[in-house]
Each structure stands twice: as C-alpha cells, then as structure tokens.
Length: 615
Image 1: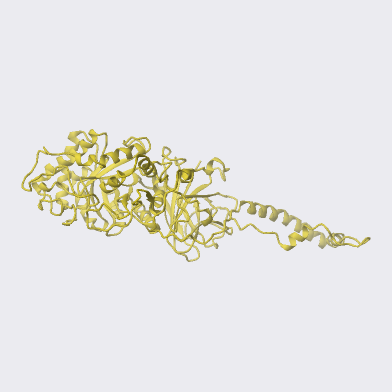
Image 2: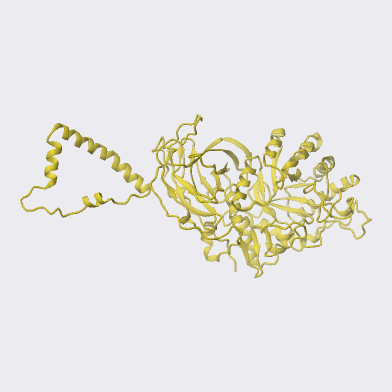
C-alpha cells in the first residue's frame, strides 16, 4: 500500500565546503563587501601536535630539562624576549580563530551516486517514512542569530536527478558577519539578493485535474486517494500545489469518446438556447476528484482570500454544432455562434458553482491557433477571440460572476496574437492577463508582452517540465514575469493511458502501475522545490550571480513570501531556488545585503531551495 511519497535524506550527497576570506561584492557593482562564514575540513592532529601531548621525556637523573635550556635562550636576551612575546601574542589571535573555524565546519564525504536514471519511477514509501517526507525542524527555532538583521540560519532542501536526495532537508547554513572581505578564489558562485527590487506577484503553482488524471485516480481506494491528494495539495505534508487547471469538456488526455456539455445526436442540429446543456459526463470521476482536491488543500475552501486551491478552466473545443467541421476535431467557430458560445461558457461556470466549485479564471479556447483533425481543437483567430471576450465579459458581469478572463493560451512564439487582442480597448477591459504554453518560442516573449502591456498579468498555463533541466526552464518562466507555473497531466498509468490524442507523452509526475500502486517520479519533488515554499502572493525579488573561476553560472530565482503564507515557517520568508544543470558539482554562496552564508556544494544535476527569515 503506497504511503506518503518518499523523501530521500541525501545528506551524504552534500557538503559544506570551506571558503577563503573575501568579499562577495560583484566586480563593478556598488555593493558593499559582504561577510560570510569560512569553513575548512576539520584539521587532524599533526605528528608535532601529538608529540607535544606525550608525557615521558626520557631524561637522565640530574640533567636539566630541555625546556629550561630553551626558556633561558628565549628570554636571556632582549631579542629573544621580543620574539617570545610576539609569538605569544600571535598565538592568542590564531588559536581562537582556528578553534572557532574547526567547530563551525560541517563536512560530509560524498559517496558514489546511486545508479538511478531520472526517468525511472520511484517506489512510494510506507507510512513509516512519513516523517521524512514532511517532517521539518526549522533551524530558526534552535540556532542563534548571526546578526541583528537575520532571524535565522538558512534552511535548505536538495533533490538530485540520480535519486540520491529527493526534497531532502540539508544541514542549515549560517550567516557570519565576522569574516568580512572573504576571498572569491574558492570558485564558488555568489548569488546576490536585493529584496527591495520587486517584480510580479505569484498566483500559484500547480498541475491539471483533467479527465485522464481523474480516470486513474478513480481506480484507487479511499486511503490511496487521500494519500495522493495530500501529497499533491497539502502545503505541509505534501508539495502544496495551490492552482489546478481543469478542462471545459474533455481534452486529448481523456478516455474516449471526447465530449462537450452540449453534444447533439444529429450533425445538422443546433441548440442556441442551450436546452441540452449538461455537465453530467463530469460526474463520473472529474467532479468527485475536483471536490476531493479542494478539501485536501489548506482549508477546503476555494476563495481568493487564502492560499488554498484555485481552479482555472480551458475548453479544447466548442460543441460541434457551433463549428465548421461539425465535429470536435478541427474546424473553427462560426461567427454567428459567438454569443451562444459565450453563454455556453457562463453556463459551465454556473453549473460548477451550483456544485460548490468556484472557477477563478478561464480561457476561451485552448491553443486557438491549433486546427488538428485528430483531437479536440478549434481555430480562433484574434478577431474571433476579441468578439467572444467582449460578449463573455458582459455576460459574466450580468450574471454576477467574478471569474477572470485570460486571453490566448498558446505558445510563446505567437506573441503577436495576444498583442492584437489586448489592443482592443473593450476586450482588454475584461482581460486580467495572458496565458502561455512553452512548446514553441522563448520565455522572453512574456517579458516583451509585459513591457507592452504592464497593466496585464502573465500566466504560464501548460507545459510539464522534466528533470533538472525542467527546473531550469521553470526558473526562466518566473524570471520572465509569469505569475503561475502549471504542469500538464498529473497521473497516467504505466502504459501512459488514457490518451485519446495523437501525442505520445513522457511519463508524468505520478504513474499508476498494474498493481494500482502510485509511483512518484523525480519531477514531483522538483516541482515541490517551487510549490512547497513559494506561496500565493509571494513576490519575485531580484537575484543576480557572479561566476567564479570561469565556470558556467547556475540558474536561480528568488521570492519573498507574505507574512500570511501557508506551510511550516514560510510566512515572511525569502526563498531562493537554485538549479545546477551541469555534470559537475558547483559551490555557491548566498549574499543578502552585507551578509553572506557559508558555502554549499550542489551535486551535479541538482535542484536546491534555500529559505530564511529577516528580523
């Protein structure tokens, strides 16, 4: 019976490495030098030290002790006396510093990495391992303050793609203002935070509750379902996803047949009054899963006043009678059915509200530039989307619904599309922001659109990222103004089913095997490095890096949580996610203001999350 997903401690894969004294101010910057802890491998006792500790001296009776003769030589002349006093003074300085560095050092030797490929499914742990999954003792409760500006040491967690560590807590890093002007010659990457430079506010990080996931979840027993939902949505015992995408009708990842909420038997019929509208097809497994997921989030509520689960929705196709193809696959929405389509979307929201499910936002068409005949798609050009949004916005207001509208919902490379939509004044007045996918184009397109329309938000709404390089991609998504990150498809079976579409997927974060056991893959833990610690209304803050020794830079992104953020010790914290995509380890240090941490070593192909509080 699968329990809570396992977290591999992995402390044997990490070490705190010594650094020579120096400054963490980046060359050319106006930052003042930052102090940090220097630490070294614990020194062993040398042969001379051991000799000094021996008791017997082997003197013959009546002989003077060699130390007597040495003392006479040292103090018997002014030069000798001066040398002796100088040595004693030097020893009084060096010995305390050496002892302090000895006892501050934490070194763990690194064994050979486990031979576990990132694509291999990890076995779930038993309930006995739960404390290793979610249990966390913050160093802020036990460590003394390094300065008056910082309330705690830096807690951090590590995942390595070889499976040696999976969201595993590491020994905390201390702040040390005593070793100012530390040397940069230790090849450590210095990551500097400026929390006064603030960017976008985060709405949430999450995944989808589409029909394929719901179908597989319905195969689990009650205990398994509760464990999986806790692992996904609980901010303390799981990774705390607080945003979920649902589909209006089915997507390509669904058991056949595909459906909408107003399918008619005759291809020539129409239903402009929506007399046949019904969400009954969702009642088999989609609606039960959504309700259970809402209950498993922070407090079972779905309002915007807390950090619990929010839902946004996207249709893959209008009902076939509204389309040129007269089927869900391919074709386009007829212009004369735009008003009926807007009413159809409002009817969906109202039907879910009647079941106690609030829809935070929706897009009017998933991937509106797609027109494939092999799965539900529908071409909707900007002029058509503008017309639908104008009608939908007015109808939402008339119905008293607070659901937001996000435009576009397609790839980065086609940024011209949302630019045209947002340039329409009336449509733009109803639009909160633009939704993007990452299958084509570059994330900088989101920054381009933000610069053109700074009053509109950016949402990343579809694209599962895999492995450590996937974490690097998520970093770039957030560094280009996205307020969300959304994985796509949460659970498939070991045959990667159900999948009614033409695309062969990679295994998602959860895989259900033939014995109905759930396997948590590396990507589940990788997503957790963001979702568990970066909570709703966190604000991205500036982070920059300086390479050392000519090495390539790690990737990173930083946030500051609100004081009310959910999850153990997340309130008011600063969070830094660092990704090492190289096949070698990388030493890093964190510099915040005038303070710097001890140096941590990230193993090859690793993700780390660092968190600390300011006083």
